Length: 301
Image 1 (cartoon, rainbow, N blue to C red):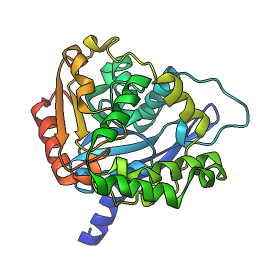
Image 2 (cartoon, one colour):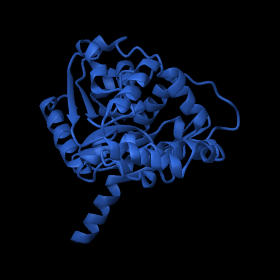
Image 3 (cartoon, rainbow, N blue to C red):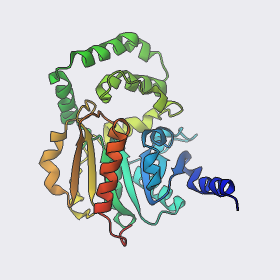
Image 4 (spheres, rainbow, N blue to C red):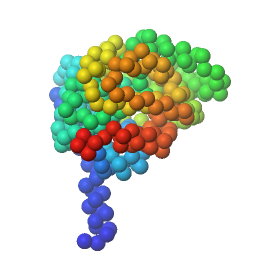
């Protein structure tokens, strides 16, 4: 076999796309890379753009949808937090991952830790990025206070300009899914260390299912008690936070419950906002891979 054909076959083996059907919800997945298997919960479209190509040289990353990025089926279906965890498990089984790292960013980080509680036998490590212990009113207030107390005139002016360019009246005229994306992009100065960054390209083709988002954010994760059952999770947990993340409560929100973790490593990225895996990808990859190496025996993964 010549080298070019070998490379083509290797590339084909390392890239896999597809979907599974769950109660009428079609959940897409995109698998890329080589090495230790890892599931990234959220959107197969958005998160495949959010993590570096370098990381794919070390991890076999499966970017998977949850129901928040799938259209509603014809008939209404009742859901719960457990529904979303069962979807992740169905995806893991479909992909044939016997044991994997489970990764979640933002609200999906809470799905990651809850999945690890329910299915510890299939999890080797838990990675949580850009999140507070839950999404309740107290943590939302802490995030707002962090923004108000920050003295960075240029950053605040950038947000004011975004709001001026797309005021609430303009948002209200959009369909709910587009409205959410535009609203989120409008908040880029609060979400990125580089407050001039435009995240629109990351969202292209990734439209949210708003009833699912409303349930996850407003009900399932609002008053989640992350400490419940946490003492039984013996898997190491990597918590990555951005110093300039004004979307969620600051890192101090974790202080009261740190002792509830069996093995917690916290890393705060000084030139990142809500997405250190994107803004400081080289440093993020180095810290994550080093942590995995230090918390992995050959028998564990």
